[in-house]
Image (cartoon, rainbow, N blue to C red; front, side):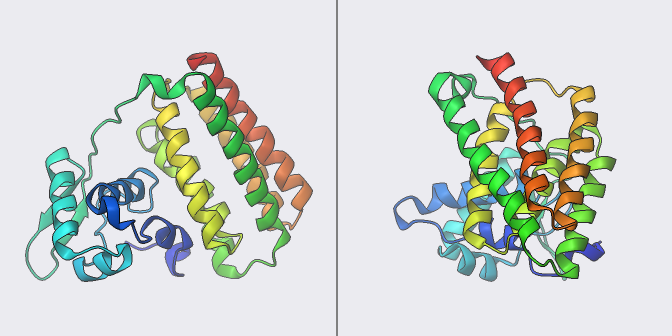
Length: 242
């Protein structure tokens, strides 16, 4: 069921379902669909956009889209249902992520953390600097509430979706797409370390301060609180992966 904060068109939705490059159309279509699922843009049990619409938005043929969807069906991410209310739906239970150990080594880890710090701290500041409408405010509050209520199994997707909501609040589709990309890189690294419940509780406290600063229009506090939040995640990643 759609939630009140989902009424407005989503910049994050547009960011992940953006056109792919022609040279690797199949591979990039699979990547876009996986990105939508793993970042919580398309949640378990939700129907993906209709085939014609999705092919148009991704800039691929319907044959390529069908091949990509078939591959994700075989991998356990989606299922196709027939009938009046049919379509392609995200599975309620998703495959466990497969960590790639060498992604967390050396320069790649430092590069990903630096890029994330610059993009997401800047996004928080930019969001707080805008005059936010009611849809943006509902979206931020709603995503925060989802994050607080999430169990361990759902936390990473809910966390990702909150961070994307902050990027959406900047009003910049390009920045939202960049945050989505860096979040996918970060999640690959996070999948290689354990989820620690005390850290999740601390993260939710930090999320509350970040969202409050944005809603209050305090750009300096929003940047500062986001930078502090990201530094905690970076410390865990360096500790486990370095």
